[in-house]
Image (tube, rainbow, N blue to C red; front, side):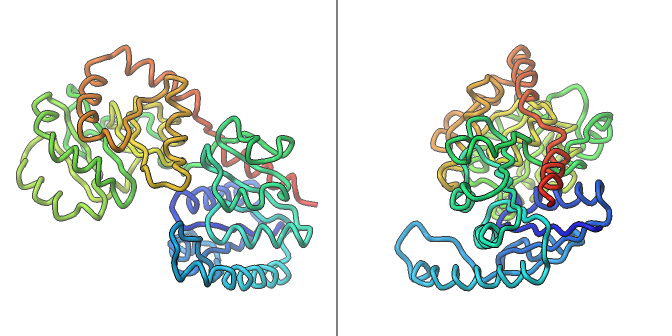
Length: 365
């Protein structure tokens, strides 16, 4: 008999891509499985999930704003409406298991699933659980997490430490360095620094880079810099200012496997999926957490690595004065690079998607 899996959540790539990775892995293990996704109307999952080949239904649900706003007054009505629609979806689709990956839509679907007696599983990407997952924590059947110490959020007997599922093609870098250097126009006898701040970019990192780029290039560093779309105009001016140098600026890097393969060390935000990918590829990394992430979870993600000597932390407030000196220090300290690389791979979970998929299938009645 075929399985039916309902997957809910989204809002950001950090929720959506793990959800798709879980679905693809279950499909590999059980090709006859039928999937239905539930997302939030107007959010990126409504585009990304169909592009990955899965059906999705949208709920009219948003988050609660931290400051007083008119949208907060409408939230209770949107929540009730989303709960009722979630009940209708569950009654119609009749899933064997409901999986929640965090994000606005995940809460109503998981809450209704538990009320209706459908087995349920949470996948929590961060070291500090999101508000949606905390809301349903005590009632779900299983919680798959990426960090130790998550007992403060979920019942201990329901926690399984699996790591975060990452897209396989992003972290398969063996044997690709020569092709990667060629693609980005670099040479093999000079260090390569990769800077990534997420798809929208990271304004503080971009500003620090722009202000001190000369010192990096003078130090013979080859720079592969993903600026994000919000830095488009300024990055065009920088390209004109530094033609024919060891600088490759891109708004978005689509072949991240080649970027990781080319890199000798990395500057990155500390989103859960970025941290998971870096842990698998084993690159010496400087993490600059986004300070306005919910519950400051990026700082908590970063410190989970820092406390095991697996990464360097530079706070967003210090990025202008400290980032480039830390980059140059790391570049010139081979022992430090080796130690960080050795320690960060201990955090890597290469089989996360398979482990989560197996936990999902165990819940099938």
